[in-house]
Length: 159
Ligand SMILES: Cc1cc2nc3c(=O)[nH]c(=O)nc-3n(C[C@H](O)[C@H](O)[C@H](O)COP(=O)(O)O)c2cc1C
Image (cartoon, rainbow, N blue to C red):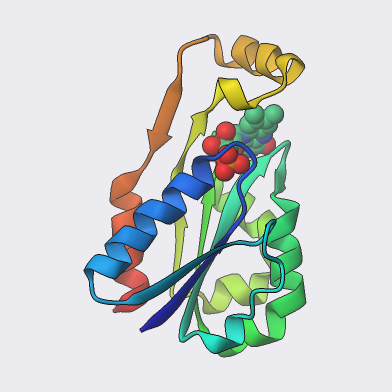
């Protein structure tokens, strides 16, 4: 299949997850295009058989470049096979994903998945870093990308 992974990433985590997903799908023999919809908002999903779309929750909202991509292309996405994924540190991804994507897209998605999260301190501005380190009670690097969930998602969207 000709697959598009459309994502945006504030601090780099979703970008890493998109890469892991790309590698897994390519390994399964699919042709995969990865598009950062912040840098490339003209990418046209109509040229693909399957679209995996996702981003992270930051400050209680889905990445706005992802929500705008979905809004702009909703008609096409509803006509295609789609998978929807998200990253986030809060333990309520099933609620967050409902806030982040239109219900009609989630209803028709072949898979919905949670890919985990990171705290990439070096990418945050000092104020946000200090606030988040206090809230997380650590200054250590945090990387909790859920590779199993990414692989399971790759399986579900292509079966
Ligand atoms: C300032 C800030 C706010 C955040 N707010 C949320 C949130 O509301 N809900 C959540 O689940 N995760 C939240 N997170 C965790 C991020 O989703 C997590 O760091 C994720 O890995 C970021 O992915 P990205 O780098 O692809 O944007 C927040 C992280 C930061 C730094």
